Length: 90
Image (cartoon, rainbow, N blue to C red):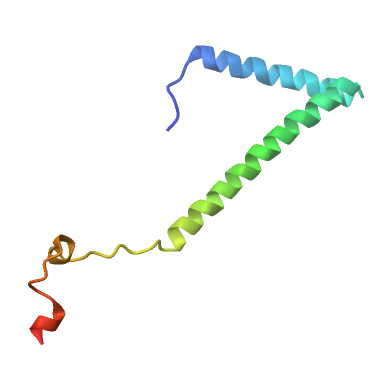
């Protein structure tokens, strides 16, 4: 679910995007600091995408492979009743 629309958040996102565009433009003009910042931001985005992909794969395995089954014991065995044992029924 996406959060509610906020003008403040939209302006922050727009400002960050324009700053990133200026840094990439400076990197294309072969400025060393801008190349480093662009590589750093690109590495961060790539790492987040890898983590998201691994999370999706883990979710697929969780739904595809059934977990351990719970063993339900009768109430008489839980209380420790010795009155009804399998040897008495025979």
